[in-house]
Image 1: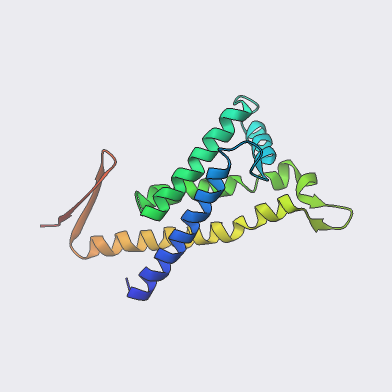
Image 2 (image 1 turned 30 degrees about the vertical axis):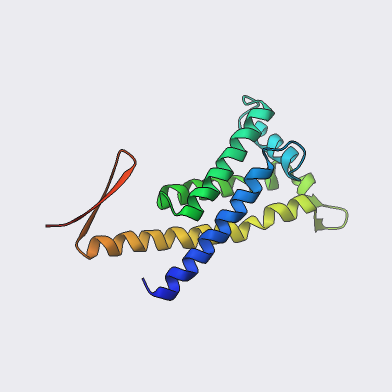
Length: 161
């Protein structure tokens, strides 16, 4: 991978990781996140009310914080990027579940909560770019005579001899 591409991917990964970290950490503190109520309502709707709001918010805060840390530190890159993509796709569900909170139908505009969701298009695009690069990187590694094996959540690299 070219030097400039590596630098671009590092910058992209760190910025996405910091974003996840910031949005995750604020969810640990009640009434701090502007999307707290929407997150609780969305998770409640998606889980048919089986998970209490406080627990769902704690799980979401932990998930987002850990994803941020793992992306920044480049740990378990493919797995974490997959989890982040799944997460970010679910953030679009309020567009359908709670459209009255996302769109102001009187003025034909998007509410602040809607803007909060639509910014995730940028995050999703960045995560996809990072995921594609991770796939390319692993295929290049295997072509260079390096055997990549994952077992017991550990990455093992060895010559193909």
